[in-house]
Length: 195
Image (cartoon, rainbow, N blue to C red):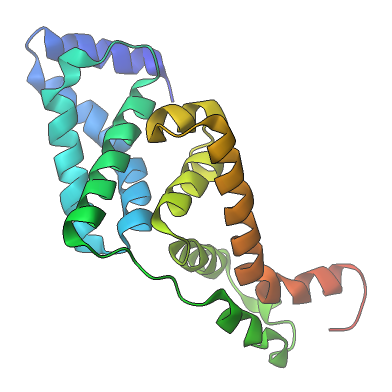
């Protein structure tokens, strides 16, 4: 994403052209929603918090100093609002027991992975990410899907870089456990072994 364009719109907004904010909303709405849905695990809440995020960002735009990218600043607002919503609802999602997934034998269907379309694979990965704790799902999303650095994620979450690295490591292990049975037939197949 081009931060120069962001600064252009920010300048326009601060000079009174509030219509320019629509450009920033359009540019970042999908990214913000993705983070929120993975944290809140509820579409309606994610939509509401996304709207609140953009309202808060608009109201606080004069405080944006440009020390980080606008997207990082915006993601930080979304992340904090999601945590507030989780606390307010007093419902820290309990993740399904990962061991339950390990018991499923996906090999019963011969080469099942071969027949899945890309969208089905993406949906399966999305479902696995949704099984992670809220903050880990957000960190995985920021790191792998938004391609932010550990340093940028630390700024957004206000966690230390070491803490981010630990959470990434643990989240990858959890995702591997969830995906293991799913991708095992493909790995065996590419090695020329019978499934």
